[in-house]
Image (tube, rainbow, N blue to C red; front, top):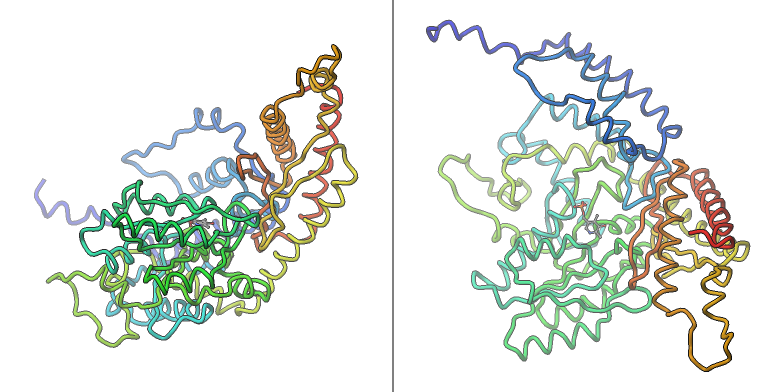
Length: 516
Ligand SMILES: *Cc1c(COP(=O)(O)O)cnc(C)c1O
């Protein structure tokens, strides 16, 4: 084949405007049904994944298939086999829901496919991202010298913060640099430490008080000790809403300490940061403005679709120092500070147009809608806490709370009345009258309580109306409710309460009958 024969080959990827419109019409019908039925869809649906997968051919071949066939398969077989993370009953991990305004933004971004990594290539779209970042910085009372960028999520934001601090405070020989976090810190901070080359031996886990807040006196002690050993303390990761219980560290105190010690104060506010929009959240996050950097997740607290995080840094120049590298083939960089070449202050060059995804919902709904939604989530969580306290007095056993919820995460644990269990009755009765203590070991009781709570979680979720997750707190298995979907309202919370009540009552019967 001569090369001229190849001239006609490359047209198969081009879709006309008219064809695109047909695809959109088909997709739009399917999405309409999907969105309208979200509340009726099961809260999770992955039970049969093995059989579905084994009967499904997902491989690619040299010849294409029809749009209709592939899209139908997506909506009928592939998407339904999942946790319904967009549904109103999703209260597991950290939900967000995914506002559809961002989906429209992504569609527009991807069809127009503009390049936002350098300002010159799409100056106004790049300015949109800067505008969003400026709004974030203002929320946290950061100075004019601050800045930041949108990441794919909180993990990347935490990582970039750590690298930026390392470059600024440690230079190139950094193996003596020490990081401080707490026993409640998200694991991605430890992943960030590993990715940035900080040895594991240089991580310090500071313990937390009964509200799961960092003990700052222990932080001060640890820093002192490390300095004495000739190490270089350089980074404190404070929690702006922990994943386990939503607790916020004493940020003002930590801020004062870090300034005095010239240590970089980072706040992981991936979950909790946007509660700064609420009255009580602003009080709780008091002192966050003293930090050197903040990790945020718009895909949590601003309800955006997954894939949007953000890093804010008090001195934008620190980001530049950590990332900027010259290359001959790049377009001329901008010199005006408000014209941002995002590739110069962040790890990525080519990337998706995240700015539009954040900006469009803010444009369409206004910030007040987000503020109101977050206030509602706090109120729903407080309501649930009160209701579970009442329920505790109506059931066999009781409900325990490791912490009063500070934000929108409620951890709880059912302590069944194990005196009913034949094994316990037998072992606690001292029938022989001798003084050997044969009461069940505390550890055994706790692991039984863990097992009952594991069952409780499965039973609540098995009804498929809500979906909860679990965690371990102070070595105890607890259930976790995280209220952070914009689609979750009082109706879903009442339903969740009912699922908990039913499930506890069903299990209490089993405890009584000695079945486990
Ligand atoms: C979710 C979360 C992270 C990780 O963020 P991703 O967006 O999942 O990468 C980090 N820290 C906290 C406190 C979180 O809640």
